[in-house]
Amino acid sequence: MTKERILDAAEDLIQTRSFHGFSFQDLADRVGLRKPSLYHHFDSKEALALAVLERAADFGRTHMAKVDGEDPAARLERYFEMFRDIHGEGERMCPGGSFAAVFDGVSSSVQSTLHRFAKLNLDLLESIVRDGAERGQFHIKDQRPRDVAMQVLAGVQGALMIGRLTGDAHALDAVIAEFRKYLGYVPAKQQLRAASEPMALTG
Image 1 (tube, helix red, strand yellow):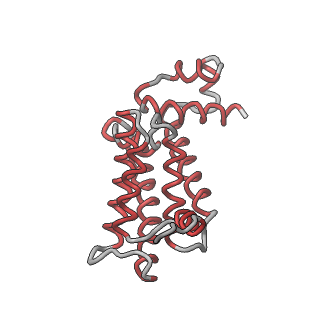
Image 2: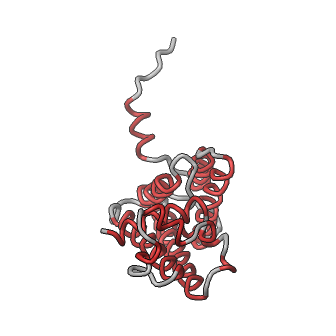
């Protein structure tokens, strides 16, 4: 569908150039349409921004729904995987993070949508952290689950920015590894790998 092609291209441009880093003409050229044709689908750049953010929120909900009912560590790992997919080889920012960098330069409607986008992520992370702490799977000491959720979101978003600046996607893995150490859990994949490795011979 033409609308989906436009959204795909717009999202890529927002993630790699920022919202103010491209014009409707740039978008038309990317999709292979005449500029007036874009207005049949989006009557303004603001409308395009809102659609991209709503789609990003839907992507997050769909991505996380696949681990509904699983233990907190599996859900948190799924969240981290989502950001790895977004980041690629270090070339892309999260749509929400990209918009946040130009927060004062977007309309109040886009700002309100960004607030909801951030709340969606924080509510999700808070639920995961609280569940993990109550089950004894995560160790958060005397911190509130909401505060830990803020640290996780800030950490992964910051890692995407560093990865974008340096072209090194390892920044995200480094941040994730530190959160695992702090929370005190080992991902299931690492547990399985360790269990399958032959025991070292001694003596």
